[in-house]
Image (cartoon, rainbow, N blue to C red; front, side, top):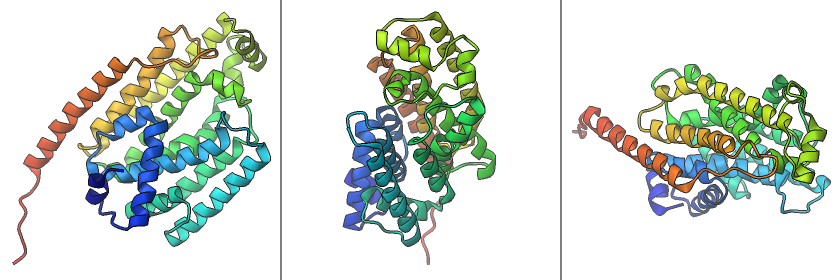
Amino acid sequence: MTTRELDAAGITDPALREAYTHCRRLNARHGKTYFLATRLLPVERRPAVHALYGFARWADDIVDDLESDTPPERRRALLADLNHHLAEGLRTGNSPEPVVRALAHTAAVHDIDHRHFTDFMTSMTSDLEVTDYPTYEHLRAYMHGSAAVIGLQMLPILGTVVPRDRAAPHAAALGEAFQLTNFIRDVGEDLDRGRVYLPADLLAAHGADRSLLLWSRATGRRDRRITAALRAAADLTRSVYRAAAPGIPMLDPVARPCIRTAFILYGGILRAVEEDGYAAVHRRAVVPRRRRAAVALDGLVRLTAARLSATRTRPPHHPPV
């Protein structure tokens, strides 16, 4: 965390500053697309977003780290321990766990509903047991906790120009769209974790199933049924992006460039999967760096315009007499 960001957010306690710095490192290392978009937020709002991401990343790594040989029972114990720290941290406002300390502070400052965090942990815990989803509705129930609540957590930080409950469905949809995008991009890696997030009914509609995905992953061979299923999943995901899009103009103008940039960058991942021939079972599609930079530059231009507009419309400051 830069000193400038922490100072702008009014975070002065040394231990709390270090906790936020830890969360920022996690965001920068693991969430390259998300981190790039976060750089377009007003400086004083960035620490809170890093805290949300840092906590989510910490929990996700417990469940999903492919580089670790931690047995399932140990992952379960670690997740239960994090859940305990979360409950205590939200109750007391403090925690020995840096990610929880920063999260608890962010939740208190921005008055974020604690249910969003407990719902998130419920979905993380289910990842230790559930390995596939029979229908899209079953998957959406999981994504409520794993993705939709992330959008809802963000709203108080971003700010809105409409009542928050009006923007909430769009924020939740955007969280789902981002996660669906990740599911499509990472289908091969998820198979290695023993999971299939693409709903079984969507796969079956195109003649595919879990065993076909596993065969394709193991042999490196392509199958048109898998390609058709992934194309259908991408079409479904684009419909969720369309449901999310009306929420962007509902945000505080200075927050819109960040979310619009994330919207475009994540949508670009779908485009990259398509350009790669829907080969996501075998390799992860990557958005070209030049394309990402162009989107970020456009976001920076929009942010500058929003800040200038906010300066022009801000009422004059009258010092106390």
